[in-house]
Image 1 (spheres, rainbow, N blue to C red):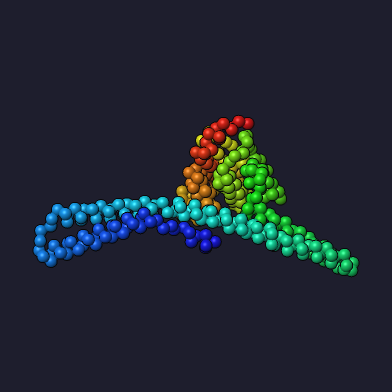
Image 2 (cartoon, rainbow, N blue to C red):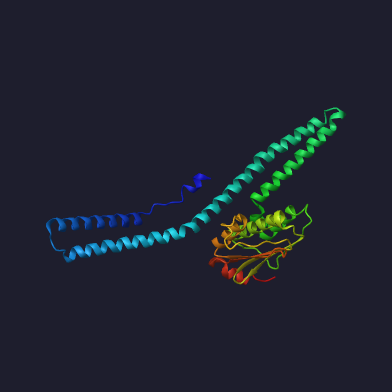
Length: 296
């Protein structure tokens, strides 16, 4: 994970050259001032012009640095989300390929052992096989959550449906996924953001809301991809700044929407459920295609 962050800062020869010229102007200005003071000479217009150019150069650099500092939080958040997705994919591959294969091998060994042990040990073998089956299923579920491979192959709608089915299978929550248009051609970063926001919202609902009904709606609109997640749980009081209030899940959802120049709103009150709405604007390269494809 750390090597991925080491390439965050790039050297720019143009900026380095401007910094060098500014340093030379400042040094020349200091030398001229020292000579004028030492020989008690009046300041000529050329020295005044040199001081003015040095001050303008310093002012330009201060403005440039202030603008760079203002942009760094968004750039850092974008970089961290990309690193997080990369790390999730790596962990998913390790779970599926390494641990999954080891558990499968252990299950085969348990089957071989069960055929050869006496009858009084059969219940223990059955318990062992059942434990291995449950563990292998959990590993595959966690791998699918970390890296929804079907996003690339099956698309956003099928991936959301598979996630909801797997996550809510053993709960009392009645859910529905409404999708009234084809979702083909959705940009990858937009599909990942919509999937992760839904994933986080469903996780929060199961942990805190005690809801009985969930409705997820996703559809194309002329201005972008719209996502809404509604539940009838116990609700909560949304914070104006989720990161400062410790609502990390909500802060992560907000960051994902903002990094795509989108918007996310949370409407909730204690005892009145929660509605999460997000809109991801179409990037310029897919805007025209989105408009022409907005048909049932």
